[in-house]
Image 1 (cartoon, rainbow, N blue to C red):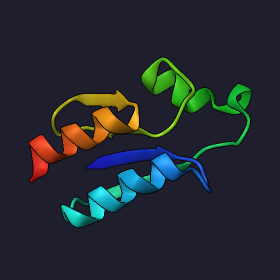
Image 2: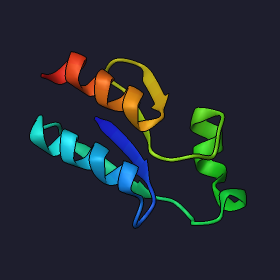
Image 3: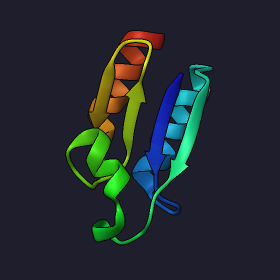
Length: 78
């Protein structure tokens, strides 16, 4: 299962969602707080507070930054 940590209105998060859906990858969204200081769960799983962050339990991958996420999804699920 892939988990996507995302923020409402975040264009980078929406790009990740679009790619997940294009590749027909089943995923769960976890919506995070708008304030960086309140994103403790994202910090706990990824070491930073920015979004999007993808966690892919099947492959043991936790990855921030939209460009890296897109590359990872393409190379893993395309």
